[in-house]
Length: 305
Ligand code: NAP
Image (cartoon, rainbow, N blue to C red; front, side):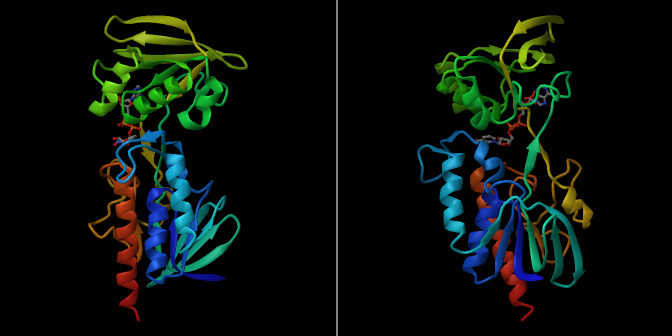
């Protein structure tokens, strides 16, 4: 069985940064990723708040970071962690659907997954007009009518991206005020992207592809059907915590991992970093937590020698 000092679960900004830091400390490091490296980071359209870049897309930043990480750590893509077993002090077995590994420590960077609306048509028409990643699926809707559901940063960034590539976009928000940051709200106004306030999506209709939606204006209590080609759902995230829970890592009420300032969890030699821990979901914060987790693992592992 292959032996590592650190196994990192997940390769978003937190996981990749943890890989750089752990590898540079001389730790034998493996990053396991269930999909392609980058995770949800790949879905982020243009960012204007990542230091060092006036504008950079998630995809670009992941490309640079992955290249840098590979100098210090091994990355295995399409290898989902199915089980973790704490065997002894600094002796952890990590199983995937393909392999088993031994590691002295584990850093959980499993992030979050998109929340669903739970309305009729959402599951049935997924990939047929319903989508959760503006950057990935948006280009299929150039010249078409799209509703963006949600009022947070992700929804507004997605709306701006879709508008930029040439879709006809309107944002549907359940309240009369956006949650998104001020600079994003201003951009929405600048681009004259309409916002349908106090409204929720009740149903998505279509046979092979989405062609209609039912919107419900909450204050007027009016339901109306509209012709539409695509629905981008951006109503927030839920933590991916199953593996953490299975080994007894402490989780808060909302499902996020409780990690301390050193990114340590309640289980020795198990650390957590990035969006899976509660706090500010920002790229730069995920990187910072990944770095701290790797350095904490190093500090704990050298004490064993
Ligand atoms: P979010 O901030 O939680 O916003 C979710 C939005 O969806 C809210 O406007 C919410 O409405 C709405 N919503 C939730 N459930 C709904 C439902 N069932 N039906 C209709 N609307 C619903 O999620 P997010 O935008 O994905 O952002 C997640 C985190 O990542 C945040 O901390 C955000 O700041 C961060 N982020 C940062 C950036 C950046 O560039 N700085 C970019 C993307 C994300 P209410 O407002 O009424 O609750």
